[in-house]
Amino acid sequence: MNADIPVTVSAIEPISGPITGGTFVTITGQKFFNTGEITVAFGTAASGIVSAAFISSTTLLVTSPASSSAGVVSVEVALNGQQYTTNHKAFAYFNIGSGVVLTSTTPDSGPVTGQTHMSIAGVNFVNTSEIVVRFRAEQNTSQVVYAPATFITVAQISCVAPSFQQFAGSATVIIDVSLNGQEYNSTTLLFSYYGMY
Image (tube, rainbow, N blue to C red; front, side, top):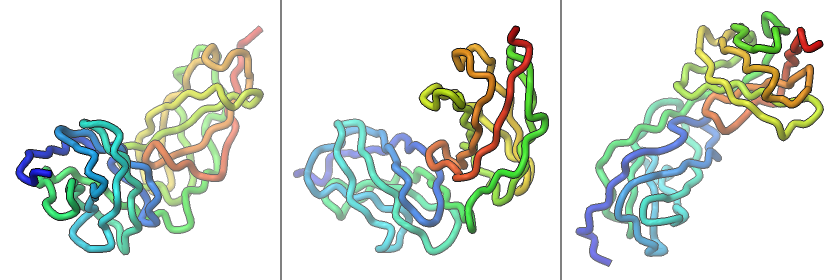
């Protein structure tokens, strides 16, 4: 392998995850090769270096390692475990303590047309740019709609409810939250639609 081949990291998704690690991160870029020695560095510590799975010449998949503290690290790729890129793609580790816990949503119901502005209360919300509220039909949890959320405080986020038509007749939906669009909290709330008949 020629170590001088210009390998470039253009984006990572998601761009944040808990300090416990375990987030599946997709890395996109250019000139990736399946060398069998691909590593990804999350920051500069040796404990932040992990092996990556080669998907294609433009895509790698990696699991984020644990971090000793919250903060932003640079994610870089080496095809041979030695010469790393210097594209400085940021990954933010957040500390969720005992995890996000949802306590209530106001309102807890809305019209079938959707567009209800919801305030979701809880604990341990973190201001990431990837907060998502997942709406799942109570009768068929494979029917899912994702709504971007806005961080208000560590105890409150907000979002807009999707329309009822997306849930094929389920009057009640289950909602939960992810801080990075991947790992969802274990507590859930219910939201009901009215005006169906």
